[in-house]
Structures are given as structure tokens and as C-alpha cells.
Length: 345
Image (cartoon, rainbow, N blue to C red; front, side, top):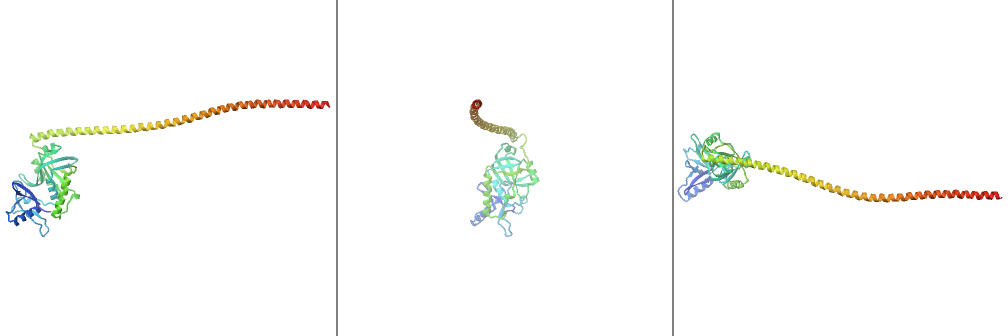
């Protein structure tokens, strides 16, 4: 962990930010070419103080910027991890971020960012990790609610100081604390190449329109009463509330439609099943009718056969009766002939 990793130097009429590795190269190059000594400053604000880059020391202390003796800013710069430093750079170099907290999403479009922004109140002095000057927000009313600015604080090893939160709140500055989790940590002992690789990896993630910067709003600021910002904030907040209400109603109606469509599909499926069952029953009825017709024909044929058999039986019975009569008559005749022969003797 080091105290200060970034600084600024004047390039033409602009202040350019550099990390300590870049500053050491610039300083060595100027010394080698015997140009005027380059001056580095801790911020790009009017309250900036001079610093100078220091190489990694033999005792293992990482390269950093040091304040000159008598500095008033040195006491307000806390040590930070390599994770803190790289995320700080990545956020400060982004043109937009999707903030996510307590189920809410706010996309901020950044006009300009200030890293390690020096902020002074009546009693205290602070460095804000990244101060954002906003271009717009989605939803739009947050831009006016936050008066077009937002302070980012990186939470790696410790949360934001309560006094700092209170002082910034009194001055109307909204604070969004970015939570860095264990699986996002970066090793401390990395070289300049690794440093750049990690930074570019994080920046690529932040460029994704769906990547969420998870954190929490440490305070809840509003624009000054009766100001133009407050009027616009109120109008847009009402609009957003109405929009949210309408979206909620639309969502409810869509859910109702989806539910009804689901019920209709189920009823249609049941109707189709009933139709299929009816079709099967019709086919079965047709088969039964066909079999019934065949059986009726067989039954009619059997009835005819039975009638014919009954007639044959009746005729047979008559024939039997006739035969019996003839046999009786024959027997009688035979008996008559026998008596005649007996008496004739």
C-alpha cells in the first residue's frame, strides 16, 4: 500500500494526470536532456501542492509521490491498495457508468472527472477518490437532484469516514460508495506492465452497457430550495414517478394478458383433446355400427334358417305321423291276411 500514486503536471495550458511510473520516466528524461525540472502537483485544482516521484525503495516500499516538508495535504492522504488505485483510475477514465444500489439503476454520463479531488470545508480537508462532473443521467432527474455532480468513493479495505460524508452532504455533494469484493482484488506487488493490463481489463468491463457498478449512496442530497435545479428535479421526479406507475400498470396488464393467453391456450388444448376424443368415439361408433349391421345380417340369415328349419321340422313331424299311420295300416292289413289264412285251413 502506498500513500499517493497519481499527480499532475502542466503540459501547455492544461494539467495532465500521470501515475508515478510515468512521472519517473518524465523526470529522468528531462534530467538526461538537461531541460528545466518538471513540477508535479497533487491535484489539478487551485489548492494544489507540489509533490515529487519516489522510486521503489530497498525496504520494499512501492513507488509513490511524496509531499515536500511543510505540506498541509500530506496528512489527509490515506494509504491505498493497488486494487484501490487501479479502480480509481478506471472509473476516472470512463465516459459513462451504470450504478446499481438497492435494486435501483442510474446510468451517469460523465463530462469530466477529477481524481483525488481536493475538497475543503470550514473545519476539514478531504480528497475525494473520483469527483464526476455529469453531462446527464438516466433517469434524468438524478442529474438535477445531484446538481450535476457526483463523488465516487472506492471501498476496498474501509468505508468512508462519517465526518467526510456529513461535510459533503452539507455542501450538497452526493456520494456513491463503490464496493470492491474479494474476487475483484488485485495483487499488491505488480510491475508496470501488469498494472496497465489490470487497468485495461477493468476499463473494458466498465464499457459494457450491462456491467453494473455495485455500491450504495452514503447520503441523500437535494438541490437548493427554489433553485432552477430543484424545479427541474421536481418536474422530472414527478414525470419519472408517473412513468414508473404507468410502466407498473402496463406490466400488470401484460401479466394479465399473458395469464389469460395461457388460460386460453389451455382451454384450446382441452377443446382439441375433446375434439380428438370425439373423433375417436365417432370412429369407434362407425366400427360398432358396421359390426352391428353385419351381426343383424347374420341374425336375419339365422332367423330365415330357423324358419326354414321349423318348416322342415313340421313337415318331418307330419311325415313321421303319416309313416306311423301307414305302418299301423300295414300292420292291420297284415293281420287281416293272417286270419284269413288261418280260417281257410
